[in-house]
Picture 1 (tube, rainbow, N blue to C red):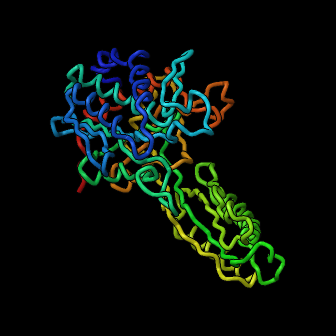
Picture 2 (picture 1 turned 120 degrees about the horizontal axis):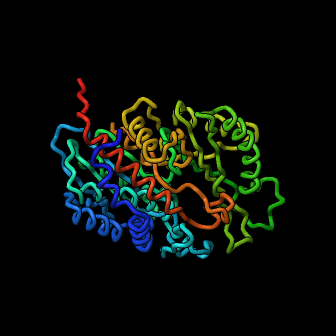
Picture 3 (picture 1 turned 60 degrees about the horizontal axis):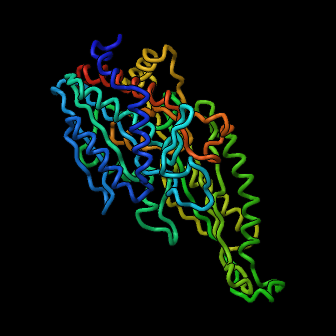
Length: 424
């Protein structure tokens, strides 16, 4: 049943309102490590709407943007959240087109620009929704919270790559909940194309290093000279078999995790007269609920031991530098049921339940006992993109922004007016 205050609050959710908000957000560049200006924009909007809003410093120059509209104290506390950092910086030479630039373009009902999809779309829809409640002065039993966080994008420090620009994988969300911004449940406004995501795959990032021989390249035919790149080529062949078996064996909600050989480094391009004495290969290993990260590590270590024994060589050095577990919550969780019901009331359709392959901050929220589903606009490609969002840049249909904002509004009015859960 629709809340009696829904209609008057929904008047504020228009294509113009959500488009303007998203385009203003896109125009504020916020790559990982430089989210501060967007955080200030969000806090200013929340403060004008009457929220208790402030910047929550995560590291130097990297604040989360958080706001709380207190309820009367008897209801469910709901957190809307999402990351402010974008997948790219916007100035990469290899990325062409308006979908990769921090300058929003509205054309034929679609907004193009860096972050338009992931995930300023959800941040904008949620901001318009919570502002609508505040503008109408609608009383709530529970607290209504909003958190724009830094450092979610899948980046991590390794080798010489250090600092804020690679400090991702949930640093902002972990800081947010550790320092007081939590709820009884949460909606992570990731671009799900208006589907309800109850599960997210996890990821392990691994670095495998093989050693060769320090030698002049002219001596490469000497049997004692080991070319690390050639050794890595042999290891890659062994890995391909391991990957095929891994991807076939594991499955969740009909989806199989994948393993990507994502980078290889070896040799000295500026000094080719030297034999490559070291080569490193980097793996992105997706995991599904039911797997443990340690079992994956053991399996990979076993492969490397067997490879080394077969070749009579030292075992490759294996390092893990991302451990992001998979996460799942049940269909019977209150947040799942309410968002599905809100989607049904707004659209007239049943919301599809899905598992998302990319990492998300739902992992951290669930681990901190803030049950979380992902639901948001985006995720849908313009026909010209032929389904390849990353090939043409980010874009989102305005109609999705409106629907998501109305679902957020409906869910907030429902949840925040329910009695708070009582746990023994």
